[in-house]
Image (cartoon, rainbow, N blue to C red; front, side, top):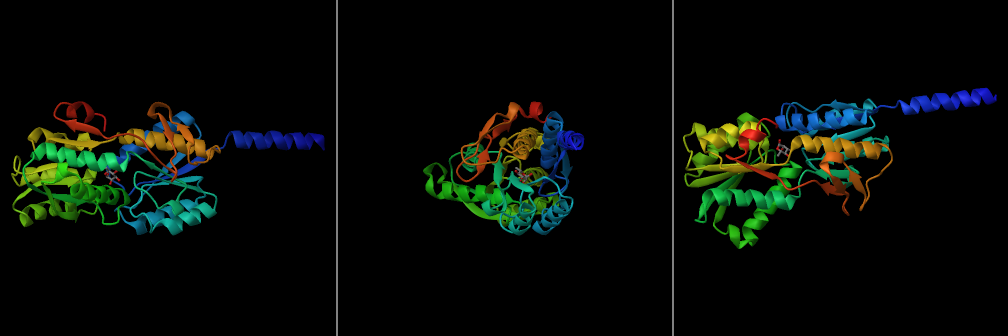
Length: 327
Ligand code: RAM
């Protein structure tokens, strides 16, 4: 009897010691180089921990319905944790609640799910840094005269773009520094390069005095910069926003973009998996909890169960070639 008991304990320990956690990593859509860099950082962290398997999957286009389907299939596979960059903060809550009822941890990263649909949100940068820095970058390109600007976003429901745009609109109204920037329209490129490109061209046609396009999305900013070059508007219209150096380098060299910004998406993926690993090992996210993520630093959970990583970096002619080799 004693022998059987001991054997059971040894066997259970062996199973437990060899447990591999399965983590679903769900970006907004497939084919976006930004999320491929996030995945690479996640894989690097998973390799370090040695006990995480990442299942990377997303819809072909950035839709909520598509993401809900991917999450449902991860629930059916009984994964341990799901990471989502949300195409909509609220529409995914029911399916995420379903996952949590099945004891699957749900965390949003990059683009938030509303607090009742996740246990934590990991933001790459604080909203205030993104919004203010983006306005400063266009101001720097255009100077202090009165200038018309437009914003080119992704989908109208996208959580992170909407937060940044909301704050940019508030700053345009409330901060005298930006009093000469006149926002004429917010257009939506649907996180699709072609549609973003067409939207950028129609903004230029609709507003002949347009001087700047701000695009807080890596897909939109590259499409807008390409449109400016193709329409021979370099020097007349400047583009800035959140871009990948690897995609933006040609437009910086051609002069359509003076400077733009972003955080390191590889580090975002790395830190996200490092935090996930600690959560899977029982360190629940609560206000005040600190996660040591190694090379990406110590991240503190705030009172809303959010954490944010750093200020975005600024890229321009002086450093673009160096960073375009990395991400
Ligand atoms: C796009 C996505 C992502 C955003 C970056 C800046 O690739 O919208 O959510 O964080 O741009």
